Length: 303
Length: 303
Image (cartoon, rainbow over all chains, first blue to last red; front, side, top):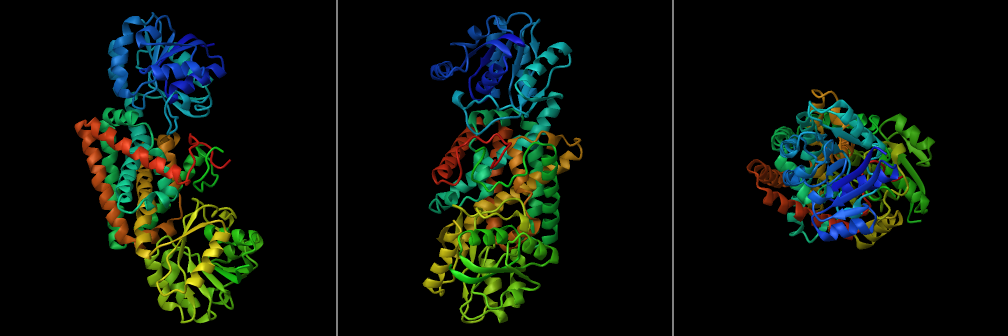
């Protein structure tokens, strides 16, 4: 047991998976939670995600040792303001937001002296959402990035690191700004691009009698999966990681126009060289153990 | 048995899978092949993909009932010119190219009277290439689109359709121009975008000490898989489906700029509405049976 009583604010995919993963390894004595809608709270209690639910964040955090904010990034400030006065001294506050500097700016001002803030971002998820989409193995061998402010006591960070390692994650630490830039490249802009492409296809579908869906080949199917992710979460990601997202988008557009121009001019060498270079980065990901080399012919996953 | 003797020109992923799928169901009495390099020919013979290999396409097609061109789109014209004089009367010629109008323009002029041309495009593949990457179930339940010229005899089309259905595919027919437009949306532009994004990430990786690879979250991992596809094949796709690709790219850029502007202006409603709309198209693909609803948390595939 690492924390006696843990409160989860928000009870979606990530919170549900935290509850199940923490219970699996006995990392918490008691896990309580709250969610905005009564229906979500009832579901979470019924399926045994949490031991107890409360109607408000203020009630949920009373007497707990660890609070994890599992709400969209845009809702963090309000929740922090509400729970601040109810946190017990020594309580660790964390979150699971996909951007970190904006969350620190939103949450830190509301936390009373004597509490500890350790922002976190588990790099895990699926395109599903809601309390019933959580599962105990979601974090196994996935990275969880901690971005603790410089004045956080090392032993508090180490303890929270142990909580995530206990749930199966590989924990890394970096500063929030660096996190936001790396994630803009590896996650945020790829999501925006997938959302864009699927929108274009949807427009065309309306004039081509659904064939776009019917003949979606492997590449596009992956895009639609990405673009099926939670709209609220992703709206908040882009609004709160604006600078890094726009910078990477600028680079992306520049590169896209280079390839587009090569297609228009029939410059096969440029295309071939670019496509050869990108093949190598895939090899790097396989070597890093973050995917498997098994052929994906676009039908079954995890079954 | 549908064809007595079949010749495969090119012995990569698709040809290898055709050989294995056709043998599995006894669709051909004998399957022969040729490939550009002696190494590929030897491998194909050694692992039993084909019954016999020949050093040149001209030798391979002698006396066969069906020839399938499994070479990159840009190589089709030369191969067609070489085999034309050696085809026996009544021989069916097909291909597996990802674009169809350009292949028709390249191949048809070289085919002698009395032969039958039925262009085809199986919507199946993996990011792997070479003779050893083929497998017998690649086409199971995948679409194969035939784009026969208008003057092709219906019974010849029906017979070739039976060959693909025998290999497990769902066969559709449409005209070549329509095919090229639909595939530009569902496959060609998504691939170009993935290639672009992975190139951007690779540039940044060089300044961020490989963290881009280390922390590649689910979205980016899918992109790298797509961008690891065969460079020659994809160069030829873009050079030979230029018009449709550039048109769809124009729409993509327009839509991307709209979302980019919304991020810059903080227009959360526009982002939310767009992301909600794209979620629906995913549902359409699931309903069409072209993917499963199993959560993909980005680790294992097909195992």
